[in-house]
Amino acid sequence: DSGVTQTPKHLITATGQRVTLRCSPRSGDLSVYWYQQSLDQGLQFLIQYYNGEERAKGNILERFSAQQFPDLHSELNLSSLELGDSALYFCASSGGQSHNSPLHFGNGTRLTVT
Amino acid sequence: GESVGLHLPTLSVQEGDNSIINCAYSNSASDYFIWYKQESGKGPQFIIDIRSNMDKRQGQRVTVLLNKTVKHLSLQIAATQPGDSAVYFCAVHYDKVIFGPGTSLSVIP
Image (cartoon, each protein chain N blue to C red):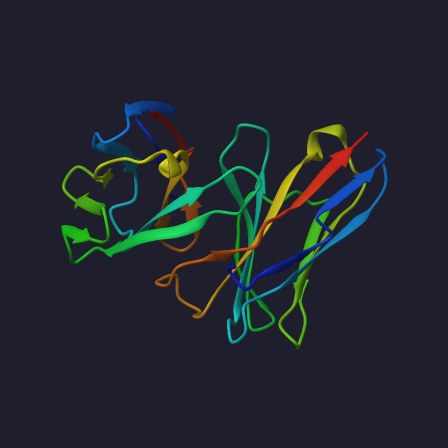
């Protein structure tokens, strides 16, 4: 068990809708990362937060947004959903602001857009 | 920016043989490298890491080699077991944490 909790495990929704994915990092970790993994694809970096502030941004669509709250949990909001947004979304956390510590991953949220 | 690639998307090995999985990265300023293992239905799990001031690091049955000259990273698994079957990703840390596309390792009993 990595200590990172993601909810929900599965989400099925229709095109055009909006969903929110939630992540609770490991106790004590200040950094939260979001990744997208499509079928048979690698992990695409979306965004990183450190202690509530955006730290780094990857290939995140404008329809997607994220935030990290004072209690350090994070949410990833996906809006105007398209079929191509169907994927596994992973959250990871690490202890430091710098990138020199391992990431600990949750088990992901599987999003299906129909 | 940073790009990370792997030489082989799939690898099949006999149980008991050694496995070698490779990774190439583009940014010579990258200073921290990690190998992760992802089993079906789970998130990636940390296996071993190495910092740029090292060439080699060993763990239990795993060794990571770093060649900064050619920007190449490899993971060696000794005496591969059926439980090692998974997808293996290298991750390169620079201003972001970028993952390679992954190698799917199959162990033949």
